[in-house]
Image (cartoon, rainbow, N blue to C red; front, side, top):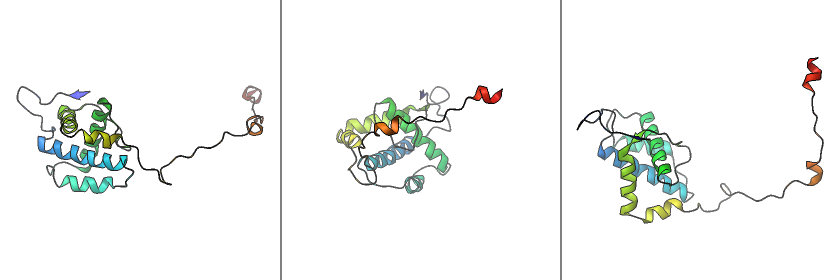
Length: 151
């Protein structure tokens, strides 16, 4: 759900993030997402500390985390991947959706980078395993008759 900005005609809510703040937080989010898509490690905490220096002093670490989760919801609405660990949260500022769309229209190569598969590595690759043999799957388990126990 997109939040309707402002609390009246021409008035912005004090909780709304400014255009510069939205641009900075979306830029930071997309940088982290590109790193994740490329299989590169990064520190969310370090990104948050660096980003907080560009934002209004009243923006707390939890407000930045929440805004990143709002961006995840906007990314999901656009059918795009989002950062693992930033669970999508609804009711986001419409400016977030607009900024993401604007960025992707301005540089379509970003979309390809966001959808790329991470490089295979021992740390993040899945390995195929054979299914268990039939001797394992045919074992009889211990079944308790709770009705009999209760009597």
